[in-house]
Image (cartoon, rainbow, N blue to C red; front, side, top):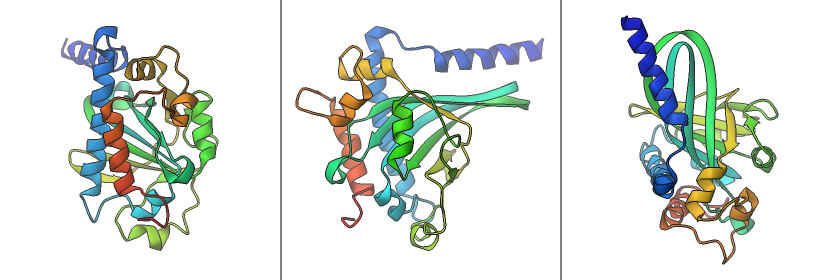
Length: 236
């Protein structure tokens, strides 16, 4: 009976993470998500010896931040979360956020739940284009590796690291490079529509920006954080 109750609890967590929010409060949920992404950046970069190397951020073509990913397990485990993807445009400026979902699975005798923040750094535009074209599996078409940590790590190791994508996690106050190979990133169309107040808005429209696109203030806050921590190469 206890095992059955545990399984029902895990199932409830999965459903709570996967089920979309009601239309009435969807925009509020996405605003909270964008604000949480900015907060994740602050908390990670405030750890001098364990932060993402500034040189890696300066060279980044895109950054995905997925706060509060829920990891659950009972024989078959998995992770699911929703976050944002920002892309560097002309002149090195960061785009408004495109909302994405992150999902991965695993098999093993595990039970429990854990919330983790993930940061994914893309060094080339090829991987970003793959995400824009639909569901994208990390490591399937481009090399992915646990990212180096520490502000001194960039200059010392980045020349030797050949991966196109570097991944990080933050859980229970601890931050480190982590492998997310095999995890799937996918555009969250419903979240984009809710946040920008436009039906069937295309990710390309968000990335291109324009006067007709009205982004909530949370998008501007996130972009300012990125300009601080990840300025274009040569401007840091």
